Length: 103
Image 1 (cartoon, rainbow, N blue to C red):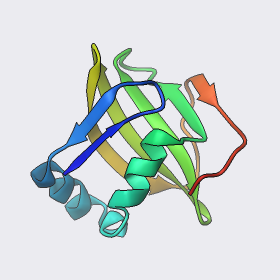
Image 2 (image 1 turned 60 degrees about the horizontal axis):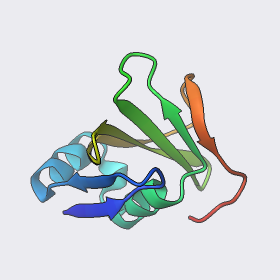
Image 3 (image 1 turned 135 degrees about the vertical axis):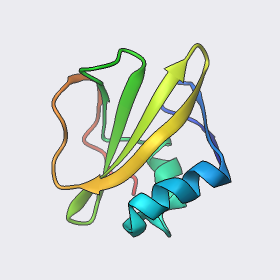
Image 4 (image 1 turned 90 degrees about the vertical axis):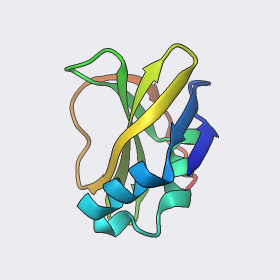
């Protein structure tokens, strides 16, 4: 189970069952549960989804890829929808950006 407070101050959660569902789709994440938590706490970028104003992709560098953790925010809480490694950051409105690496 993942429980943390993200960079935007939201309490983010992901049940063990949902995390296993994500890992089944994206097996490269099997040992990256800790990196997902760090990405939520110390992202390089946070974007606003183009399709949904309550969905926020969090991005942090991970080797030659970028770890993307997609969350839905509801009031003071939120939950992880999915996570994956990618080689590019999706377009959208940037609501947070830093040049610091924490991973």
